[in-house]
Length: 400
Image (tube, rainbow, N blue to C red; front, side, top):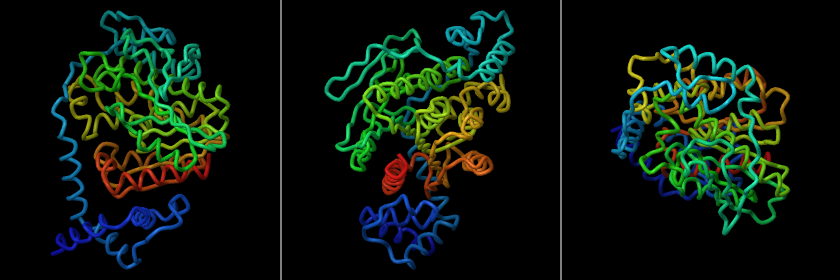
């Protein structure tokens, strides 16, 4: 009986217009009320309460979990790759020093590299600004300041969505892991409706940047420890090069928005670039490794590690590409942050998202929180994608 009521409620919610969806998000997370549309058709309070109470039952959680797993298992091209320390990739970075051949001492070499990088992350993420920006028909390209050795990956393609009367406001937009060339294009256009220009960047090894042997963006997140560090560093630096281009066009009110993997990249870029005034982090976790180790969407990566390293060890090795390592760079910054998390997330587990929220509160960093009543994959499904998109655009419109 309860399940039947829930299903009928869900169907009714789907039939309501766009602003009703925002109203539901408003009820679930009242603190973000100012960032949702002010006009539209809203659900009666009693009806919204019924939806909320239904969510609080285990039926909703079970149904959401089933939907998440169904979406997560649609792809059949996931590969379990062999574990590698990847010290040759760390050697390419140049700073800190790391020998390409470690003679059986890879574990210590990686640990020393990470410790040194964390002591001087400003230098670790330093780069030479590109000099070959080319904009043609809304497509911006430039050579990545970080060279991976894969020609396709070392050219950064971006899509430029200028808004009329943007008042000098622009966002760099980073989609999720394994996004295709169209990822977040709809969000960029929605930002335009809010009077904000958007530069949508393709991260390392994604879409057009994939080497021919890949079907997925495996080289960005894999059981190769060093290559994953190298790829994340490349995406962070590429994002900062996008900020360079925006600044050269005269933009002074610049922000960055990232989803899932893009959220991690966006956070590190924002932490190292004081030009960023707004950070919108769509799905958050303190440590890169915790998501990989426990997430539903990364179980093939987790299997690749086998018993070679533990979760705690990987957390230490990948701390250099984790937001937790750079929180101390934010106090005193004029950076307004929106932290989005999903109550039923099976990839960025809620306990890890809560660690981020707690840290921001304890450090008294300026931020707002938006809670989605869904999971990770379902964030991209109606009506949650609309709730998410509107909340992010509204925040950018208010604070940028």
